Length: 261
Ligand code: SF4
Ligand code: SF4
Image (cartoon, rainbow, N blue to C red; front, top):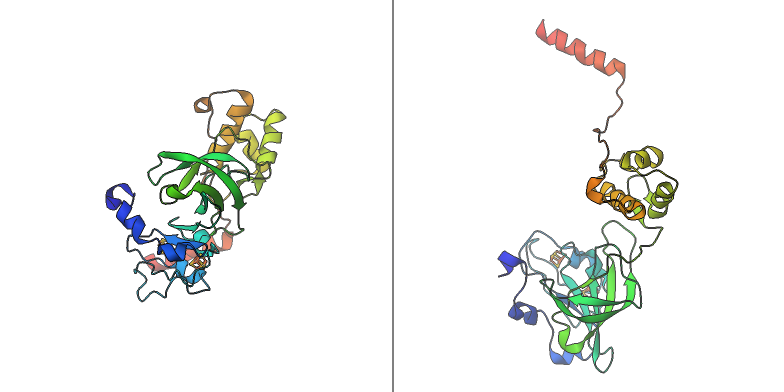
């Protein structure tokens, strides 16, 4: 089932939870990594031997729940988003569940959002208690949620309403450091095509050539001007050019000339 759908079975999930006795002692890690791949950031992130040393880079992580204090360092570092932290001692009827979350917009503390299962089905409404957004391109935000104790093996993601306004200091273009606020200001002052915004802000001119930012800008133009996003042009793209000294070109031509003599 996992190989075809990416969804682990109930038996697989049960197998990565610790004993009832350990669960009563406080937060613990749940590592839902069931396929052998060359990967080990969970081990290198942990400074408490909560994940045992790998003999082979393809090994599955071997967890020592007695060493783990649920710090979430490994949750944020796992590229497979396969690690969660559970605290069954949070309250009488609720557990605290910490999940990795890579979508935008991020939820905010105090939000009540829908908790989703491994396969994206709605499970129950959950409350967002904390949003940790560590700096660094290889660190995933970690969201703390309160979940009914009998649902801690089911809830693995959340659905944040799309219409929810995003933080204006959110970076839209990482190559040129352009924020959502910069983009909105330009649209509101009459620059309503991607090309205009690109020429003023340099958005889409970096190494990624607008792979992500172009869609984000088009979405903003559509939402502010009331246009259909499919009617908006994505802008003109040109490959990145690197300047070259004329001397190098002459040198190369002379070498070619010598070879052919
Ligand atoms: S939650 Fe913290 S202590 Fe536990 S395995 Fe992960 S990094 Fe180690
Ligand atoms: S970092 Fe994540 S995906 Fe990689 S081995 Fe560890 S748990 Fe699995």
